[in-house]
Length: 390
Image (cartoon, rainbow, N blue to C red; front, side):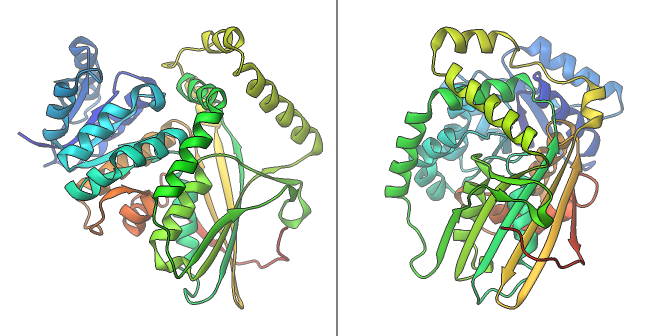
């Protein structure tokens, strides 16, 4: 039997939250499974879901180090969701299996190096098989990717569009997020080399200009500092812009952290600098990684207090629009909703025919905005018009 959705990694921290969400929210006639190496641990997750009134998942034993088991896993489902990170270390087998099986694939990666590597290795296979490979379907990068789509849909598509997005957030990272970040810091050179290789191989639109950028400056309404965020998010937004004519003939995107005070700006710079240096030195890197286990995550009280607010300002000729995307517990409870709704959108919604490595805006677009808004994250257009930041 082929299930609608299979979740790999349900015994981990974010995977467990996603499993709970799917068990609670799946349509009555849907089928689903959870997969991993330990049947005992998976049975415990299934028991928990059933005990709270959710739809009990099937159990599939699968091992990411065994190609045959991964191929069988992918062939047994329509949508394969994986929360098994860091993805640079553990992620490739699921992408390979999904690309070869011609199914939909979803993950939570925020690792640009992994996404570029998977494009180079499996985009052509997925494009030929009809597989849809959707990376970064969590807090990286759904609020930005869908937030910018929501914004540009309100603007004319025949004039240049300039968009700047400003993020404020209060979040405690999980062990998996911390390990992924250290991995990215420590492999900066390899990441740059892969990005360059992808740029050389990937076709770009010939008749449209799509580019990112931005420098440190004042935040909107002079309320602190805007600092370019070197995350995967702007890359995802720009890929959506290249694929969708809605973003206009000439699209620019700036992606910023909105930092209220100079003191916070300085403290953040020092913190990132220390982590960046320490991750390059093997004994220090080992010490940092030993401080927190990849499966650990913040306590429910901390998660309850977590939040984010993303303000997006766009100019298109004589038109300007200011939109806002907001949410609670974005890293974990929120991400479980984002990933769960993305999986259900791929499984059940009437979506565009796309294949290969793609993005949430291209693969699901308005259908996913409708699923998320307003419970998982709220999309709104702000009435006030102010002088433009930057």
